[in-house]
Picture 1 (tube, rainbow over the protein chains, first blue to last red):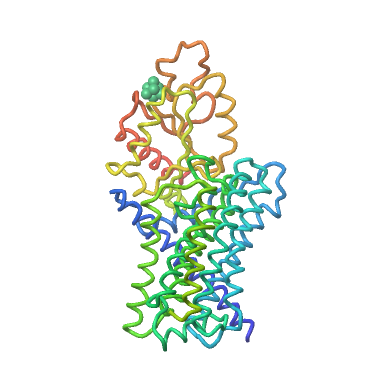
Picture 2: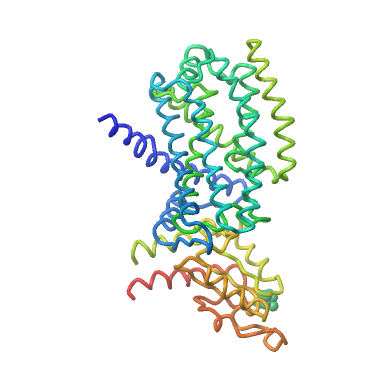
Length: 312
Length: 143
Ligand code: SF4
């Protein structure tokens, strides 16, 4: 019974099926808004679903000559499983704040590392030089954003009484007001937003897949079902990472009548902010990204931690 | 028209290959993605990798250097895949027909599904050819 329930949580709601559907839909919001910002009409709402079905059902899946098949095709699945697990954990904590376990935030942080890691391994195994170039850039990018990301994450944890639990952070905000309203929370939210931008591979930091210089980077050799899974992983992350931010800084998802409006508004605020940043900035070089994250953003995160410690 | 044909024609990833064009056709392809024509509203996007592509859009008259590469790229495309010959050069070698290094026309190298005449073709002609290609894919169901 317990296992069936958990399988349902993982595979249907709020796991794979739900977050995949929402992810593909959020992917459409991204494409449509991008198109509108460029004065174009943009694709219809079902475009990402059609793309996914086409890749998953009707296109050939090719494995490059000499690439280890299991690693090359297995890694996208590992990444998808990790992304699904993140969305399950975050959403379940939101629905039932008391249900999480101590340290589930740490698990989320680690799970968020797995999709880029699996992509790196898959790309290296393909043997394509552009893919390895993209993978090495992805690795450097991970090194640069991970430090300020974890530092900024310390602020919600410190504020909510040092329990490293998503539910605890939600409960704290329910009684004490949202964290974004506090001084340290606002600074750490800003640092976090830029780290997340890099985590999702959005434009100022889409250095690993830079389409105009290294074609599609780690994705270059993937086709058919494997490419569909990679795109799905990306969509799920694009759906769930703003929810994580809502959870950490905007008081989590609320399910009362007024709460739903507030939840949707804060979710859309974060999503649209990310898409607008993406559309108004040129791509930076990898060394610029590294310097930016290790100086400006890390400094911001440290300042927010200090203010959180002082109680602001 | 079955479900498969519908899906295939609603989402077309285009790989653009320049096999020795004068670069005018290539610029004209980009025109189709600008706000005025915006092919993304039909689900047509340019992709960077041949492994993601559904359609190989080939500009320029194939010359001795590029003919082996065209063949290689065509073989690397995940099937079902389609080929469009773009411009007078792509369709029939155009004004480079008698050049010292021009080989066979494109449709003798790989199977071509649609031709876009013009030097360079207007974006309207490009869209017209894509409509023809879509009609062709959808009509295939019976066979
Ligand atoms: S068809 Fe005309 S414009 Fe196009 S590549 Fe040939 S010469 Fe250039």
